[in-house]
Amino acid sequence: MIIGKIEDGIVLDHIKAGRGMELYRILGLDNLDCQVALIKNADSGKMRRKDIIKIDRIIDIDLDAIGYVDPGITVNIIKGGELAKRTHIDLPEEITNVIHCKNPRCITTTEQELPHVFKLTDREKRVYRCIYCESKAK
Image (cartoon, rainbow, N blue to C red; front, side, top):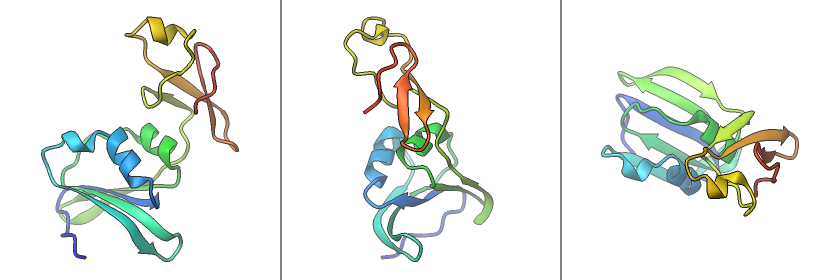
């Protein structure tokens, strides 16, 4: 399979196999009017299998959402057909509106305009908790 070279855009690389669609949905890539390629289960020397997302335009993407879905992803910014910037993503300390609090008593269920904010409370176990009610994210 051949996916063309990107002149100006973004490549999300080293996505754990099977996580590409989740990331595609969370980032809202289906709403873009440019070319987006999702490559699932590509061969990888380090990971055995990985997913890759190629976006044929430079857009603002939520790096915190990427880090929450899969820390370890590499974000490559391509300009003029060349690699302009490479960023390795880690778990964010705080995420907003990526996941939603499921606690029916949380203020976010009655106050619709409140953002859903979660803080990282245990980096080793990847545990996030709602800042309003302390409920653990699932």
